[in-house]
Length: 185
Image (cartoon, rainbow, N blue to C red; front, top):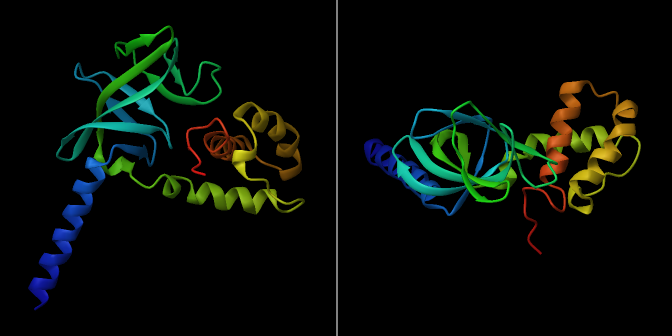
């Protein structure tokens, strides 16, 4: 009986992995490397949405859209949120102007179907830090640039170091009204 239960559990696990890869859009669950066919790498940051192109076993071939400035790729033309940094030799495909598509493989374990899961710890930190003095606003109530301006004075009040400030600002920008996370109404 125990063997049957283990087999069922393992089958469910494999189905979960297959469903994850077959999803149309996944999210980078932790910073990772996107490896192009020529072996060059792009560092991809937490929360970036990726479109699945092909399941390759322990990795997944994906595409990422963004806007190129030198070796930096941003979520928008206004360069409000850095989503990837390209190694020399990583060749994105130009779509129009500075809009590009990055294609490569990324380890499957760095991806998730659940966008909310990506931001759970960040959200807890946001509420912990930002409700000490006032009610916290929903991140989607402001744009990325508005959050950047709002965080300037709040950083001092909350006594955030550089790492904490970057951590919190990435969450706020990614979940802003024009951020990576698309709020469903």
